[in-house]
Length: 208
Image 1 (cartoon, one colour):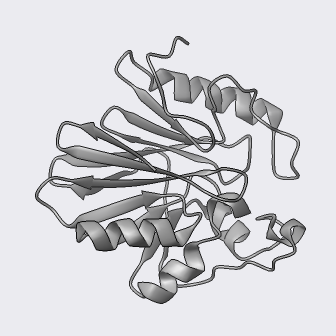
Image 2 (image 1 turned 30 degrees about the horizontal axis):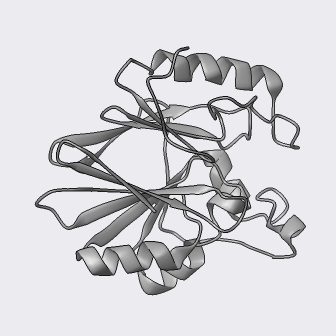
């Protein structure tokens, strides 16, 4: 677990047991609300929330592949009011074990609930009194891929992992879309930006 402070904002990175995917948790000083970006191993997240006295409000999915979503059903059981945010294509993946790749892990993972909300390009969500989350649709790695910006934190999922070429060999991948999405992501990067990818370490001071 890695904890980073940016002003009054705390960022926690959990490295998950499946493919070492990243789950991120956000909370701010003086408030009990917390938010997740992706959802792998649920227990470390649950333990942190309990220890810090935080109430999880929702989960924003960078894309709907099994290694980024497999903890959702456990969290939903523990938190019945939990809201999950994804794209229209993400909803299709949540309901289809072939699209979300759980089938290839020997698991029939499906997440189907009325508490899934669809995000659109340029959507802005108020997370905390002085922090919003901006949404960018960035398909290519998967048709459900989204990128999120919170302050100077940029959550890119697998659409952009610094130092690695974006994987576009999956059934719902598209190489041309990936290249276009990379340009969108680059436009959000400044010298102060911290890249929070779907796998690997958080990266600062990146040169594009």
